[in-house]
Length: 214
Length: 214
Image (cartoon, rainbow over all chains, first blue to last red; front, side, top):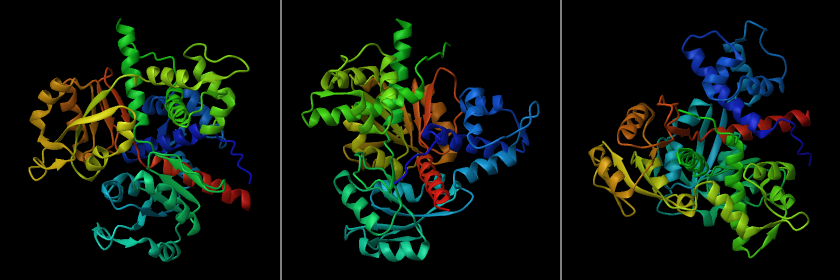
C-alpha cells in the first residue's frame, strides 16, 4: 500500500484553517486578499501561507493578491469539501449527543446520518432527527447513504472493537474521540481527536510566560 | 506584551504526543527508546523527533537512546504537566457533560472544578460530583481553586460574551469549543478546538487516494 503523501499534514491542517478564514472574508463581502492578510488573520507567517498554497499550484497575481472566492473554492476542493460527506457514529452518550448537535460539522458539509450503540437503554432514543440504532443496522445505513467515514464516540474500552466492526462494514476512514490509539490496517485512514492536546499548548505557554516574568 | 515564543506550536503539539507515547512505553515496562522508535510510534520522522527535542536541550546518549522515564518526565515538565491544573467550564449542555466526563483530561492532570451556565433549567443539576452553578459564582470558584484556564462549551452565539466574562474574572487562558474565533486581548492565551479539522484531513486523504487510483 503506497502511503506517500507529499503534502505535510500540518499543511493540510492549515489549509483547513485558511479555507475557514476565506469563507469569513467572503461572507463579509471581501473580494481580494494578500498572503500577508491571510497570515495575520490566522496567525502564521506570510511565507508559510505562500509555501502551503504552492503545494497545489500557482495562485494569485503579484501585487494584486488572491481572489477570495476563487481561493476559497479551491481550498475547499483540495480538502475534498466540494462535496457533501455522510458520516456514521458509534456511541450515543454525552459526547455522541454533543457531536450530533455540533454546528461545526454542518458548516463544513458533514452530516451524521446514523448513530449506533449496543446499550439497550440508548437504542430507540432520538438525537435531533436521528434514532439511535443497534450496531447490526450499520451496514444498511452505510449502504443507503454511501458512507465512507465513521466516528467513534464510545468509552475507551469499546473503541478498538467498534473500529474493527466499522472496517468490517466497509468504512475507509475513522475519526476516533476515545483517548487511546487504535491498531488498524494500513489502508484505513485514522485520526485521533485528543481533546486535551490544545489544553497542553495553553499550559506550555502559561509556563513560558511565567518563566519570562522571573 | 512580548509574544515571541521561539518554539513552534507544531513542536509543542508533537511534544504532547511524544509524552503520551512515552507514558505508554513506561506503563509497559520499556526503559529505553531510540528517536527512531518514538518516530515509528507516533508517525513522524526520526529527524523530526530529534529536532523537536533539541529545542529543550540535550537528551539521550548516542547509540543508547533515551531513558524512557527521564524523557517522559522531562516532556511533561516542559508542557507544564508536572503539576495539576484546575479548570472552569461554561456550558452545561451535551458538550459540557461530555467534557466533564472525558477521561483524557484527568489522564493528563486536568480537573474541571466548576461548571457554569445561565440557563435556569441547568443550574443546580449535577454532572458527576459537580453542581452546575450560575455564572455569578465563577469568581469565588476561581479564587478557591486557583484557576487560570477556562473552557467554553456554549452555543456559538454566547461564546464571545462568556470569554469576556472569564477574562474579567481573571482567566489567563481559554480553550474554546464553539466554532467561531474569539476577539480577545493579546495577553490572553486562547486556542480553538475545531472538531471538524481532523475530519478534513481524512477527506483530503480519501480524495488523494481516489486520485491515485484513477
